[in-house]
Length: 274
Image (tube, rainbow, N blue to C red; front, side):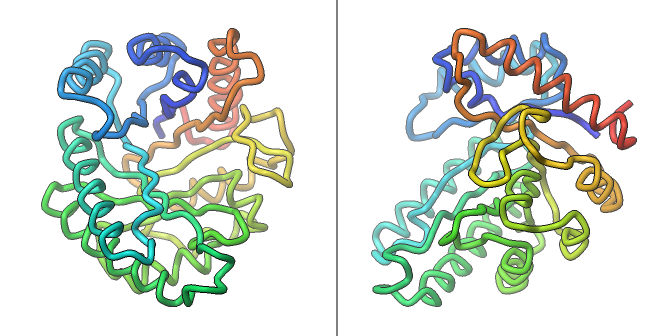
């Protein structure tokens, strides 16, 4: 199984794109996920990213996209975000990535103004449309499970139900180990998503709040989750390290290297990495 890194770790520390790509390869990661908005970068920046990754033989696997507007109550906002997500998929195709990592966000106004079933239905409808667009590009959509109280998809049952209703083979789940912990999902719960996982994230947390720490800095019991992931037998699988803001941005290289070393060790012990 390949081990990747989401490049937002570098951007959050104020390091430029080319520096992050170079260091990702130098530290030892097999792949990279590119967190970039196609509406915020131009063709020159996209070419720089692709050329740098190709030169270093560092495949781009996933393109994260936060699109909370897909469940907005304004049809015009939904249309804008559908078009924006299509541009993300176009960029994923240009980068020769495998999937778009899609975050749908949360119910608004504590479910008290807009009926939550309407927001759910809008998400199902719009994600199905994106699944059809992704299929034409031979890409997948990986939906992220978010552990927050009002998240649209916040547990395994919710993910399974959402995938059932979207009912498109190119729309699958992303497994984020720390998010599963924060949602109270034990390792054995992910068997429900067998055959429906497109991508995975790994990070640590304190068991109470979202953290995205290097594995080993929190309380996550990784071996059980990694054994469950191995049992899913996902072909060509990649698990990507996701890191939030380093407490010492000037030491970001050490922060990322620590995450690589601890994750690589855990994966080897689980039989997931040579």
